[in-house]
Image (cartoon, rainbow, N blue to C red; front, side, top):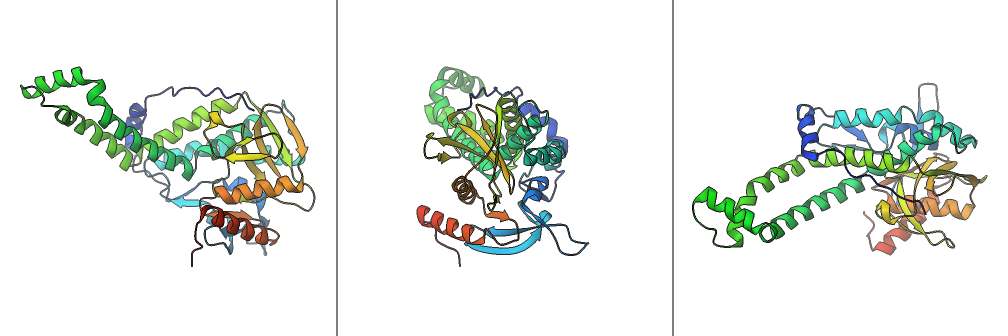
Length: 333
């Protein structure tokens, strides 16, 4: 089990939002949530000299294979971040532009414990763990819960302070809790606007990336290679936390970092990286490959991607069908 030491935020959310206000409208239309350099390791070279790398997409909800497409057409979400997304993309690219050579070294089996590329792989794991639809969903839910809690609890926790402010402002005493809540309307409306505009999510993602990045740097890295005749696929939300019982393998995924035993990310069709207590470079079993591929299908936002050879189509169909049955998600027409 990795020993997590997650640093506290070192900046104020509102101050960071204010610094980005001038860039609020600078957007990237189609934002990729999986780096193309990562997707490239699962792709094949297209036919003809003019074609680049190609991937086959599989729709998990509908349980069907989609068209083969270039990397630009995979794992992208229009308006994923609605606020200052251009500056966010610049931040992500600081990591993405360095990932290519470290992935190649990892695939070759030469990423030893002291290799400087270890830190780049860890940054890539942090990036893909945070830059995900799941993070946005959790952030939105947490923000809504916090707003409700503030509105509900503050008139009791700060009753004397609010009562004094109410009297100062209106010249008479508040008639009760609901009257005190009037004082919260304006500041809570301001925060709600930051939520609705996507500003809070944008800054939360940036600050969480910095915290996760710092958390992973002192930890060890496993590079796990697949055996001959096997290959990995990758989802549109590929990095995941996990717990393991030490005997049967991974028992739970996508919990909070502090509650997990590690974080994993597929690097290419032939290897994946895992944050763990000890450094390791080893080959896994075919059963472990199936387990990791099944997890990718389960945690996908919408799609998984694999080499156009067609070897993983039947597996994706079966795994998606089993997941729909397990979660009682009906197949779309």
